[in-house]
Length: 425
Image (cartoon, rainbow, N blue to C red):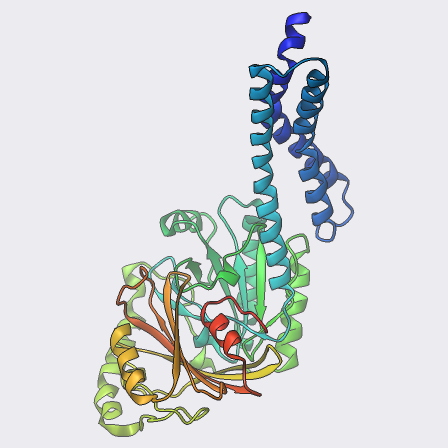
């Protein structure tokens, strides 16, 4: 017993990390089991479980203080206290999860805020863009093959999509798992809606997820609307979708429906694509011959428009008008353009020449270069975004966005927008 007393601080310190982990699991599991509403009390459960993780450290500290009153701490006791302090580092994981969970809850509760556009590939390599579904109600389902509730609801989401796609409704599944893993799972549970992969073209809003399944609901105007939580039944999703479909119904013509949303990877399903390619090739000479007049200036800001905003098929460069939004008390309107076959340095050089007197700010965020030109009055801005790449790499230009602010947006806020870290003065 005397020998144990001599090393009790060390033993307590050694066992602190394991004890902290077990206490977290025990407290969190117990509170979750007795929870009446897991969506509302998650912060309380997480906070109490995190506090429980500090108990092993406090016990070790109390033993060390008690020993210190009797005699100087031994080397083993000091080592025990050091190990107990290190066990506090485990708290970082639930704290980090709590921060992400808070962001997820906040993001899913957004209302009438412009949905960030995404541009990525589905599991069969087909390009999928949110902007291609303007005027439709879009449901983005964040899922994973290891998530039981995700797997259980996929057939019902697929039925919801098939029943309502003619009304202008589309579902996108989104997972950060490898495309081959997802394809293998889809062989067991096939769905007809597109399953997307996570890439640099997917904004952080759709990636900051810690609890699955998760949903983002986008109305016909391209605005985020509150989505049901993970613990709510599929019926809640159906009701939310129907409410948006009925709110501003605009059925599409049957020939506009994007048939074949299901990933068709087999050779026998390529015939429609071949016919489409032939039709486009026949129409191309007529279109390129001047059927569409290219814009020389952006209609929103009256600023010169980069020529490379013309599509590869020369279908024109009409902008995508993004939903109006509020930024630091200013009303922001914006036109979005995709840029084709142009490097970032060439794009920036063109704007340096054609926007005399404009200030410029540069940043690197989300694996992309971000450059914004803005006038001295701080009422107009042109933002150039590069494709995914390393910092200072001369990548292809991804997009250009022309913005107008009424009243003027402070320079600090414009710089923050460019850094994707908005700060209102």
